[in-house]
Image (cartoon, rainbow, N blue to C red; front, side, top):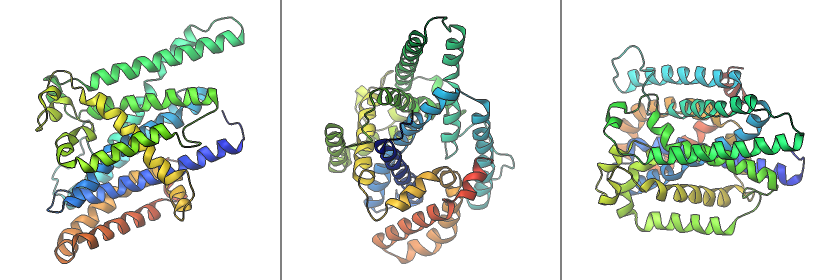
Length: 369
């Protein structure tokens, strides 16, 4: 609920900046993708570090920011239809890109399987629809009691339902079963299951931070900040060991993680690596937020713009990445420049991509307004 206070505005302002930082890292990570496994470990470290937290952070924020509109309006069909249309649009555009730059010979895109960029949109559709059964329950069990008791009943029901979803999907994501091989990326279910807990944690955290009128996004929580700093340091110091476990960053089924050169404890029917990864991803995300978004700097206004227009940047940046990689990176840039120069070029083109796509017209277009 908007209070109109300075703290509330500051919190939204900081989150816009953080969303901008995250979407820039998404774009930069995708530009790093074609080079991250070449002979330069610098690219590999940067790429995997970005992937270690950026999607958990985005999905947590999706749940956190969705809570207020869901609480006031519920799951409206008109809020889901634009996402469905955007998913199909992205699939078609990226399929054309695959045909042009990667030699895909299929004429019709495979709309039922997705592990590339559009999976995030299909996951958002699932997450929003997953709250609808709770709405039906509340409508069917609407008590004819006082307003205070009715509000308390609703609040308790939300907490119980969302907590059950967190536990269920956390357990589900830990499984390593034979049937997962057959499902693979059907309807992006592997990523939906793996990243669902972050969305519901975001919903639950927003619910309670709204009630208490305090939030870790208003001022730095030093314990969480220190935990995040420790995780970031540990990632780079122990990278030669961490790299064997990095499949978990992509949100695949358990059988894909178990194929790696990892400890036997993480190869069983239940993989506890998911439980270890969740606090790492969330605390690392918070560390990046505190460093980049709580205090103003010379990039604040630019990142705020990226955050406001993060959806069109996310939806359309990969086409630019594919064209750049196919036409320039492989044929001209990679043979001619050293690793630091290439890194600067990738940072620059990532920044320019966000600048080009981060505008109101593109935002309206991808929201079908």
